[in-house]
Image (cartoon, rainbow, N blue to C red; front, side, top):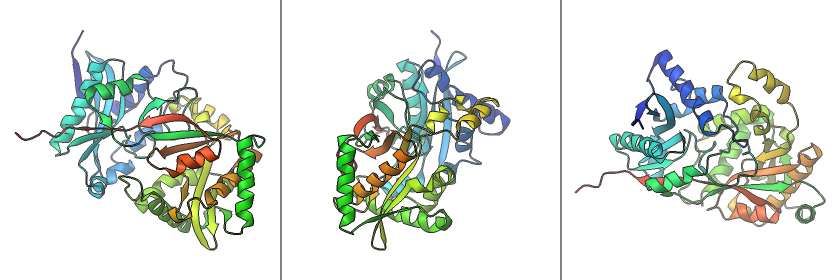
Length: 386
């Protein structure tokens, strides 16, 4: 069997663009025949990984590698450094992502080795990931949950990736990230109880619910930023969101979201909670072949406006002072009513941290069940001085 070599993609010009397209298309070899895999949209991946257009490159550096056995590509990985985030965390992490490889540990070992060397050359002391140049989109290795495709912004990986991570010496970096599913049938016992508790909270006059006001977008982003910073400050290793990064990440949702399903909890005149729901567009994207060919856009246009079964909620935020007060219950009750009336049949809550005690508790009260679990890993790579 021929030797494995790992080479970086070209740095500039048309050669880089061609190589990066092949880099992103390689995953099709790994997931061929897997009905749960949602092919990533190639135009979006190309934009995100271009130093000219990718948001990450405003603050960090990255390099992309392809592993070959002979002349055949057998794996991909990206190594990156995010100096502002490292500084805020007091870390020196080399973040890896876009990790895909055939079921061959030697390939994985070669890819991890390339990322580790890249990190050591820049004075970094640990591999951390997988994150695809984005700390919120499709990160982690799928540990459990292969009964349905992932929801929007959630990933999917083969079972052997976790084994390869452990074999290389990676350790669990933090609490797992969880996705919960909630049945929206109003006749279930859990939903009846939820609506009853919400009516009690509302009758006390403490809280109310409002929809997002897209005409006052900058003010709404300010509010969401404050809620994110204050609601997540208690989590281990929490790094406050930068407002510019938040606004950039919210722009696609501004275009796609139904304002009636992006909800805020109010206590008097203060906004104390946020519960944004958007259609699970992965039900559409799984049909469009990653927009690899021009005719795939026709399929996208035929399906993009159709009702999805799932509404996905990407953040459940309540200020700590208002935990266990009924604010979250009222938010979800209103969301469930509105979503069911619009034709949605279940809600995906993803991804929440296992380290965050509040969200799993809330999910349990809603009758939710954990249906996917993702893991992020870390491995020390610094050479210990003798």
